[in-house]
Image (tube, rainbow, N blue to C red; front, side):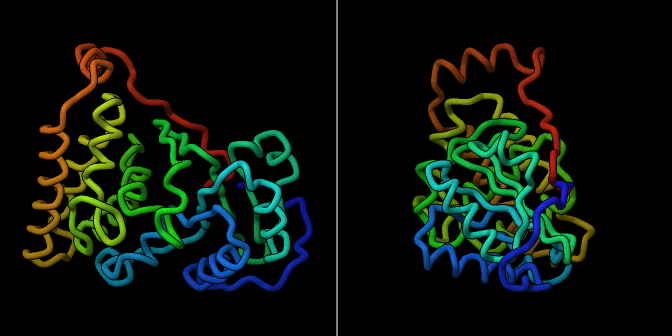
Length: 260
């Protein structure tokens, strides 16, 4: 958890995570900042199935993705909105990541800049303006699926997305297969992790309270994603790394600094 070493100067924050995310997004829109909601709260805002059992879950911290070119404006915004900056972390890592806290609610805000860097690295700089409030659906999916140690909350979020949105071409309310294949066909490690995790999403759909139709839809959606990844042409870089396979590590295990 980031140190709560700054004083809140802005208006009171809201207890409900979804409402607080919308409050922040309204301020972001008003200032035209390159900042979009990510993480579990983005799934909550976009996916109806994430709001009700059996896929509803608790939410705590807020995650955003932004551009480093707007670091100063992003920092100023969160100060005005009532968040305290992490005075030790931000000056050192502020070109890649910013941490803020709401001490009164025991809530942290984690802002990644330019690239999503955890088990794998995903460049999202050209994706920041696609959707108005959150990262595009396929990028929200990838940010979950690139974590090798996938937890149950991540699985439930992805299952909700697969129930609520079709896979196909383009963004908006579609999980963009073109983007998925373009990115993963050049990176065997990321592709391999995503394939493993999609199988986990499919295999864990049973026995949690979904209807048989919902279980079937998740299976079909996962099948469509895996089939697209199998069929898309691969680069020489992908093919060369695939020959090595799991003989060498294909992912990183990141430090979870300031993130619960």
